[in-house]
Image 1 (spheres, rainbow, N blue to C red):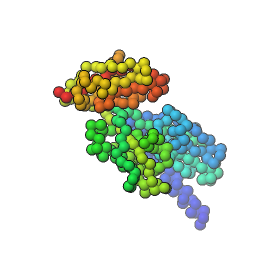
Image 2 (cartoon, rainbow, N blue to C red):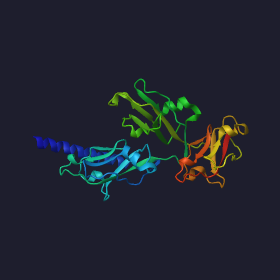
Image 3 (tube, helix red, strand yellow):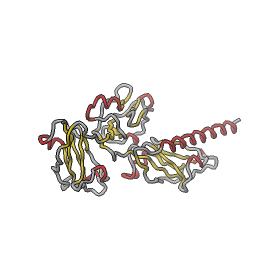
Image 4 (cartoon, rainbow, N blue to C red):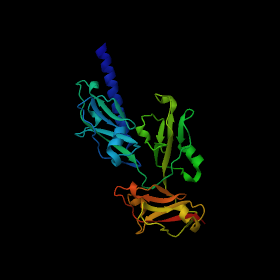
Length: 299
């Protein structure tokens, strides 16, 4: 009876793992990119621990703080679901763990993982929003509420989302469980599903598409700053007297005419209300190109 029960449980776990891999494969990596393969641990101790939080802390800028998908293979390239091994963890939020004690032969294969990371190449990141506090049932930072609450600071069709605690800790590294985490639905941390019955306080930001100027006109190009100091600061406030009071869109290019979003540089601000900022400290080579901006003003 004990052996039969073990076989049932073992079969159920394998089926569940195969189903998870099938869903992962179908989901793909839309609106993002696959990282390189990571192999942080070897199965020589208790097993192979390739967790998401450790990947974020260990691999630096090779890894993002808010992956949307995960894939796992052996070092030889075999999909984890095809190995027949039992997995203790296999999810994008927690990562992958194969424990030696769970295997019939008491040893795990050596695995590598990669993650789908969001990218905002076709738009701009909004400012950080903190609409709710976790004082009642949890922290509800939903997309629909952000759209209704933050007005023209928020778009109606974001393609990606990032979530951090108020002091900047990536949500995926907190160990808390999330009921929602997607650009269409937004982010929800419910107290009732946490071991300590409480949630941290989170902030979110969205990748929004760059708006067209269908019902207005583009201003001339402005180049107010050079990237000789901390970066290139082409903020709206500094040229507000030369443009309209409420621009609906912004475009940024290098002085040579290359669209900012095609340069591969990282921007801390890209919105009509705040303007455009490229900080040197955010770039892998610690330097920014020289940019110019223009705004869409009502006709």
